[in-house]
Amino acid sequence: MRSPHVPELVCPAGTPAALRAAVDAGADSVYCGFCDETNARNFPGLNFTPAELGEGARYAHAGGAKVLVAINTFPRAGALGTWHRAIDEAARAGADAVILADIGLLAYARERHPDLRRHLSVQAAAANADAIRFYVEEFGVRRVVLPRVLTVNEIAAINKEVSCETEVFVFGGLCVMAEGRCSLSSYATGKSPNMNGVCSPASHVHYREEKGELVSRLGEFTIDRVPRHEPAPYPTLCKGCFSAGDYRGHVFEYPVSLDAAALVPQLLKAGVTAFKIEGRQRSRSYIRDVVTSFRRAVDAEVAGEPIPPGALQRLSEGQTTTAGAYRKTWR
Image (cartoon, rainbow, N blue to C red; front, side, top):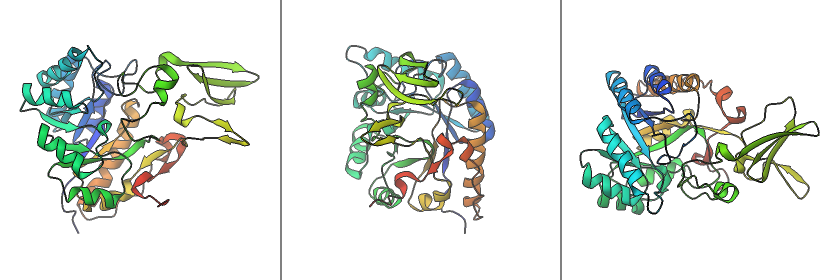
């Protein structure tokens, strides 16, 4: 049987080249951010200038895709202008929506750009119907990106009670914390992913050889040790390898990626509007392969055909995948 509706495939674009790769691979929408702390992937070498965003929007629109601009960090006191300008630049560049978390920015966008769609970022961590209705009624939010802590049944229950669209993650990195609530990077580096836009900033990452091992550090903290000739993972605190008593291993979280391709039918039945792929910091070849794979999966489900077996494990973190909270086996 044909799926009851066609979901939107929302794909990451950390650079103009990645945006073109995503559009060419079949993305319905791409999401991106500016080269500053207004977005939660504020890494060197990533993101867009206003001119690049305008060019990217024209390329996406010519290919039948939409552009969503993530302005999803929380403004610093006294620096609101930076975030307001980002919303203005997104509207000027022809963005189809802005993805916001801060209620002040939602109010600003509603007042200054009433025709620009407002999506609620996962950074807002709106995980129940009452919270979502608040954003819809007060700020005209049209879509909510749901946190990665909900089961499929919980998502279905929410969709029965809200009037807006819902978007869920289907592939990419996971976080041990509810989005918008993590302080680990702030503790280690003084830089907040929710305000400065970067978790484990590169400026605080250090590698050194020590007794035949390559040691990776974040600020003053040793995150991992590997034999000198083995690849060293990027030192993200929650995915570090630590010693705790007699145990040595991943105390907080294993390096693993979400892969919900097999759950596409259940998520559609639950009323999800859009499927989101994580990975704005990834290469354009990664974007091409992941988007192509999910394009096939979504199209097969919509056509009532079997979903092709996944081939994305090689692109996952630690070459391991999980269904995450969608299947809470610990309950």
